[in-house]
Image 1 (cartoon, one colour):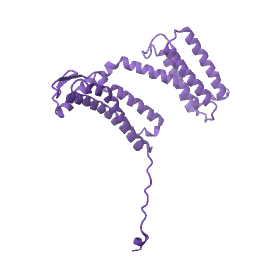
Image 2: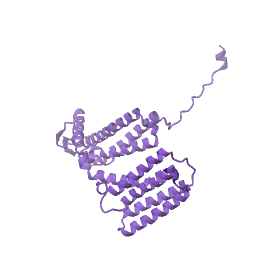
Image 3: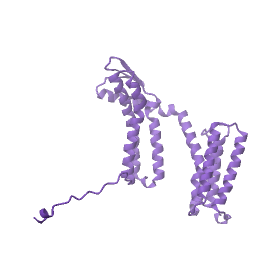
Image 4: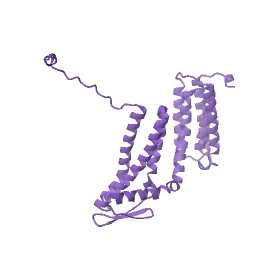
Length: 308
């Protein structure tokens, strides 16, 4: 079936697609109230079309028939998802440029899949990726309390256990734990959704996804095990953050130092952990060297001593 498709140059198809997208989006903007999100999505499409026009001038190897079929099926699925995203609860009514973007990306994948232009697939899918990412994050925030509910008592229990182990007598009630500081003042800390490390776990998930997509050779049993350990390490880093906040309150009281530690220690601990983990992953799992080893210099020897 694909063999009977009339031949067309990639740049010609890119120009036709760009014209079609701009006309459709202008109509969408004209019939809908203008918001920041509308113009933001329109800007993403402009960048997508510019990338398509640029990449269409590059030489590339056509997709195989099997790959074309898979891309077409994916495009149809994404297009249908754009039509059903509101009933499914993924996006909000009314039908807006977000749903248009998903639908258009699906149509673009079908068209470029039919003609077998692989370099144009990613830029035409970028608006879908952007909208899906934004909507997923919004959906995540709407269900944050439900997602972090089971983690709150676990995080509280582990933190209190460690504080007692290091000699700070801590009393816990539900998700609130209390201890007396060295200044004689009571310190009470409440473990809420933000304290569970859910944001750090989400960031780690995105980083792992990007690494696996960029370096598919790292997707092995060892790589999956390392990512699992990375999740444990990310959660432990959050526990370490809570312990450091508690220690600052224990030694310096509830105001001053503790407030600064609470604001800054999270991103410091998480950043250090991410650097350490991904450095190990890239060097040991992927085999990338960040620092070239200098060759050892040969120490000159005395010829007279060598003769002896």
